[in-house]
Length: 474
Image (cartoon, rainbow, N blue to C red; front, side, top):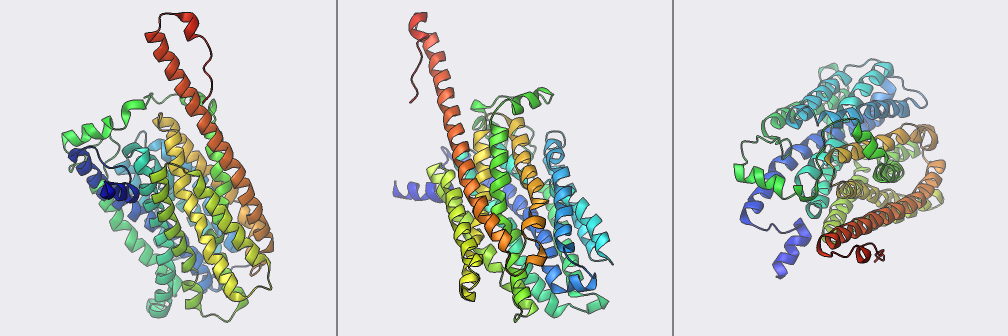
């Protein structure tokens, strides 16, 4: 009994049979291995732009003022444009073809980034990379929700999200090594070699996806799944799922429920707590105050990501065991508020500022939890789930397109006073919306339970007067 409790805590629900256990092992190996490697290269590409900026790209491309922020904003605009179309394409084109194809597109564009001669060329490349990379994050969360139960989902979402953070972590180490050993080789600067190596890593992973990705349970033809396992993969999730054909009725279903509004608002706001890491504020702070080598400016911010990975995995493990998602967002908001206050008090010692930036890495824990929560809320409608997941990321990126320009411009380094005040306000707003989504989910569950009880009473009780009496809320 004790071993089963530990097993359930560490890896989610215990499979009910050996067949289900074998199925989960295969899914974990093939789905998670490809999705994590894909997301690793996705975030490696994004982090490489940040690291290239503080490692010579700024000077070589003669970047001025907020050019760096504009690069990220243009990428975000492409990401927004590609978000919902990419997720809807997964309803039409097999994911085993769509995911690797998009990965090849952004891999080729990464190679192109190594050849730019001015920042305008980089603007164009980053826009189209945003469109292609938009397929990965919400698309994978849609796929995970198609294969895993709610009690299995948080952990897998956490592992997937952590793989992206690992890409950010690896990028700092890679850039420092490239700067030391490849800078000037073949007449190319170290930051140009960084993009070349990134492209070399990306393309073989795309080929792996073509070979092993299993699509979704209803259409899978994966060579490693038996007929029994394919049938089980549908039966273990399909009991409460309503199937619809793709039509304009989808818009009516989505817009007439609270789910799209609540989940989109939640991540649109809570996603901005990641601004410490996504804008590499620590790297810009170290570069602005001086006294640190290029290698140190690349290495030290990796601690933010490392704490983010640890927080994500611990929180994902806990939420799968307890089935409560909201406490993770409370933890995240607490950490980011403390970090912002420490940095706002500019007379605080340098060591405390290091602690604050690392502590803010907890913000990454909310990403996996929020999307696992949305998958759980929309589990009864595949198409609505695809739209809600895509919209969550789309609205977050719509905010993120202008948020850094307003609150975290590169010209505000090293203090980022406006940004720290905005962070405290963002955390307060996140707590409010978290409560709202929790309340609406609980209300929907109560109404569904009441409806089921009424239906059962109508079948078993012939007296219509007794049936029509209102049931009290629990």
